[in-house]
Image 1 (cartoon, rainbow, N blue to C red):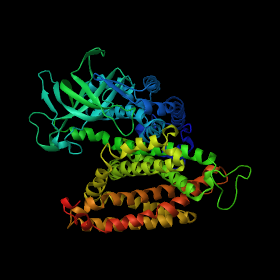
Image 2: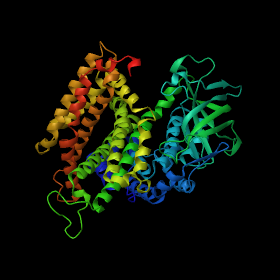
Image 3: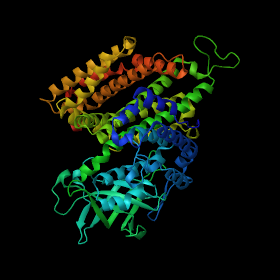
Image 4: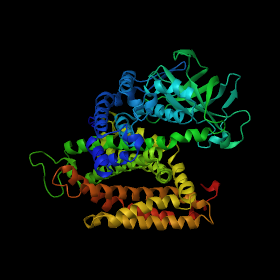
Length: 592
């Protein structure tokens, strides 16, 4: 396996040359006071070092060893506790955290790059700080000042970790039927009783305390999702002076044996009258949880990108070194017994597909992060509302499309290796196994597609979609003539998506099955079109600079490949959507 190298050059290109994020920060006073180009550059450089030098070397061994469970105690693989301490001491857990409580206060466009690096280095390792950061978001947005002051500083510092306890064995996506109960106590606290499954980082040995955010129902709660409340439940109680007190009545009943992310502790958590504190208002737990969901779902999309980037780095090194057969046009490495496999058209097809998806995904995830920053920090109500609507529209696309392409890209990387890609010691098969979970957790990709089509497109009457389409059309109408090779196919793709959206809005009036029948393919048409917009933006930034640096020539060549070989996928996907729902219901359940 190749040594991981953080793609800092491309990150700088996206941040500075494609999106000019400094100009965005200048428009947001809250960021203008805390963020500057020099600080961001230092953060990216240092994050690249710690992820590549300290964490990435642990990835293979940690996968082989996995986590261990014995008598409710979970032990992480060798090297993880020490690496986590290094990571925490660098302030990385709180890179996007509120400075009031010790966080760095960096915008999402910056923390998104750090997330990619840590997850490329080790997806399993990256889950621990990711869940902590997510828990911090909800606490900071909804908890009382007392809870924030008690818990956030140590969580941002990485001294304490966080977990999100949502899922129950009988209730996956349907959280409205959870059974975990919360009983109010005279002192204002609650006792929490129930069992949660699939809890990432529910128990481990990386930190001295773990702060669980638990969804539960009060005794008088209304039925369904409107009766869910959110509670903060610490593993160890916290004394008035901030020191740790008695162990709370909660424990890890077991850890899951999984396909991938073996070094991430996926726990069954039992709460046996554990002391907890309400976060936010009673029966408003889902709203409090969804505060962090847009960030977390973008974060999972970035995990797909991160795995794909690691796979590409391995594959390109292998393709340059592996000798096999001769080029179809004659020998290229005449001093060797065969040519490196990078000369072969099909290998180039796979490598370019990986490169185009990764660089397009990096631009798209950064673009969505910009909307999150605008929605959070803008002082203009109209600007903030537009960004919020774009976040709502694009979040399911970011989560599902990046992770679907993450699996495709890691499989391409494995295929480049041939038989060696199937052997564990080369590392490619681990990436395939690890990335597979990203399509499942934080809302399966099928649920994301339903959310996009049902809630965001149809639910808004097409208004959310129109915001995005209008932005792309404005870019096309103002683009320089020399960009025509990119803007012309982009315009055709947007026209296609316009018509498909209108078709769906009409069809669902008479057939509610059309939403579910069309959703996955529609999301992919949207994703490929959004990536075309990203590639046109990147081409604009690179055009005319080819002679300055090979980087720009590479960027333009990859853009041309995307438009020629990958964007045309929208046509078969569009045909599938327009085939309608009828063929899905030709069989009775017994006929399957």
